[in-house]
Length: 371
Image (cartoon, rainbow, N blue to C red):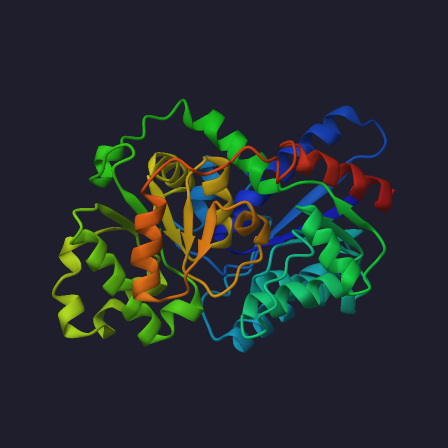
């Protein structure tokens, strides 16, 4: 039996882990002599129930074998603590390969600790690029790609990005594990009665908003422009639903007094569970976000998306005209959301993210590599 060490720490990674854990279980059930012992390490980057444990509970992911409980800190401190603790786990477990996901500090720490100990790394969501090195996520994903052994790309564009950077070996376009996860979660959620009315909204009568990226939450001017745009949208008699990230919630007291006085016009609620969030996304008229994963989920559910960033790694969504970059510019946000609400002129028919079986393809490739 070979050991596979999976390293996760943030909400999007728990979601991607769900179909991977299922694929590993199915591999083991059908294999007599090539079974994989799956060891899960949770760094603790996201640690409260709504952002962490609920995903393990609802997505039927095995409880982590290790919880490093690193928690929040500056990028350097958080990554350094993760690096130290992951190294201890690797030395103890001696895995045959590690798996990292996406572009968080957990991703980089896991990849770096493994590479320094000469453990091969599989990077899921390899090849994504925003080409903005001021984004900590861009640094994380680029460095992780360069030190990984197997690179699993969600799109052909991601493959092309790696080739342009002279990374040419062990690159596989397998599709997107988030699509696998969304299909699984939608099937599971059919057994759950999630009422939109509990969030104060009705089907296709609201704009769903998420704000969590440091580039927006740590820049008060950008954050104020975003909330100013939300207030202007409410003045157009549009309903706004904002499941607010804990990081963003802490910043509201710093907003200008005139903005704070109008926050009650916006329906601000606590973070939603994954199933609740998918329900809210699928029923939204438009999604306004700075999340990478939600941009894709909007596409899965055929909902136009307005992205409050200056660039996105999911450029194929821009190319097919269903996603729009607006930065944190109040005027652009209001105008683009209004355009997105104006009709059904969007084409969601292209197969951008595979066939929903990316996780099985990844496990097959990993198995061939470690046995």
